[in-house]
Length: 112
Image (cartoon, rainbow, N blue to C red):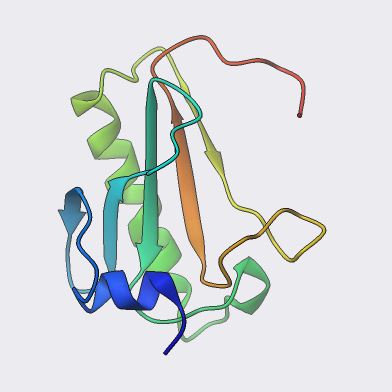
């Protein structure tokens, strides 16, 4: 198993965990791009958003529900960004579905 997010979900690699249930985990990004930068992963290995289907779509729904609740804990009431990268050209570095939650300060409107 070479997937770092699978290793994190199996607790083989420590991280600053902020949320966990039977389907997902959330933790602080190790290379934050903003004042608040969280990552939510599926515990089930799903390669990218392109691989979401009827059997695993409940995981994505769960992520969005939890993110909406956790956002107030991180004082993101004024807004935040949810990002997923898909494939090499899309900037996906880890081939495991995950969402970045970025906020805590005004964000640039343009894409870098």
